[in-house]
Each structure stands twice: as structure tokens, then as C-alpha cells.
Image (cartoon, rainbow, N blue to C red; front, side, top):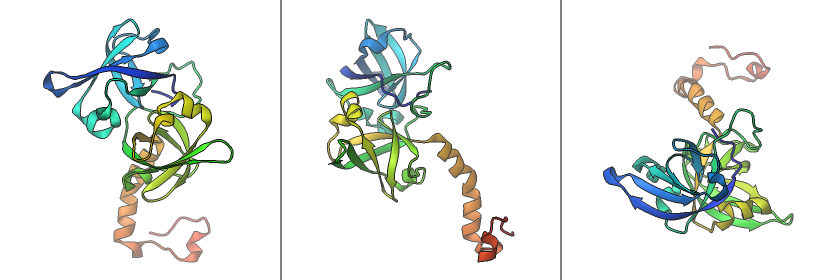
Length: 223
């Protein structure tokens, strides 16, 4: 479990394909290597990965095909920068929001607009199944960074990035058309799943429900 507060902007020192088509990422974790052990979970660009080997400040992670297809880690090369966050302990503050490290998919940077207050508005296009999980002023993790959604439509949403976030994370390196990893708020995922059956029934049998104005006074709709 993570909070979306990036601890380090690390550098990939090498990549390689291992037997069974597993992908290997070798990352210089720098100061975030302190205290981590083999088997620990570490978020790399918001993707929860297991540390399989460690030598000094260097960590080695194995990435399966599913992760490469669903995230931007498949685009990483030697010298690429990635966001690093170690998993949280139960006695520390959650400064961002609860992030699982299970990326839902990617989005593409549509535009970057400098605002009068010094922040940068980033617009991202993505699949509708992603934006259905979002609400204005809700939380979203981009490359593992906890952010607040400014606006959301069927195929696009936006966030505002303060100068510190641009300096301390990969988001400051993004250009138009670059991919970002997206993890929607996990609470929204469960709400959508639990209500999907109700919504499908409503769409199929609309006359079963009393939708006149009198039923909108706070009382339950008649079935």
C-alpha cells in the first residue's frame, strides 16, 4: 500500500528480457534503498513491484508481460527516470490518498498549460472506462503521484501540478503525447461494480421504476 507521495526520482541503469519473457528493471534507488529488503514492495511509476535483488543502492525488479502492456514501464530504457515510493507502515501519515500500486491503464498527455499562479494544468486523454471511475475534486494517481482531479469528461480529465511536483517527479518531464500510468481511486471501482447490476436493470426495465418528480423528494423509488 502506498500514498502517492513520491520519495525519489530515480534512474534506470539497465533493462533486460529474462527467460520466460519476464522483463528486468535495474534502478539506482539512491537514498530510498535504505532499509528495504528483498521481497519488499516498491512503487515504480505507481506500479507495485517486488524487489528481487539488491546491491548497494541498486535494486532489481522483475516485470511480467501484463504489467508491460498495461503501464508505461515497457517504454523505459537505460537513463529513463521513474518515481519511487516505498510501501507505507501503519504508523505513518497518509499525506496523499490510498494507492494500491495496481495501475488501471495509461493515458496520453493532451496538453500542458502554464497557469497565472505558477502551476501547470495537465490534460490527459484516456479510455471512457477510466473516466467513469473519476469525479471532480476526487483523487487519482498519475505515475504514482497523488493528485486532485480538476475536470473530467467522457474521454479526458485534467489535474494541476505545483512547481514542487514538477521538480520532484516524472510529471515535470512529460511532453505532449507522452504516456502516464493511471490508478483511479479504488473506492470508486467498488462503487461502480456494486451499482452496475442496478444500472443495467434500470436501463433494461425503465418502467419498473417510478421516475416522476414526486419520487425525487428523498423517498426511495418504487419498484
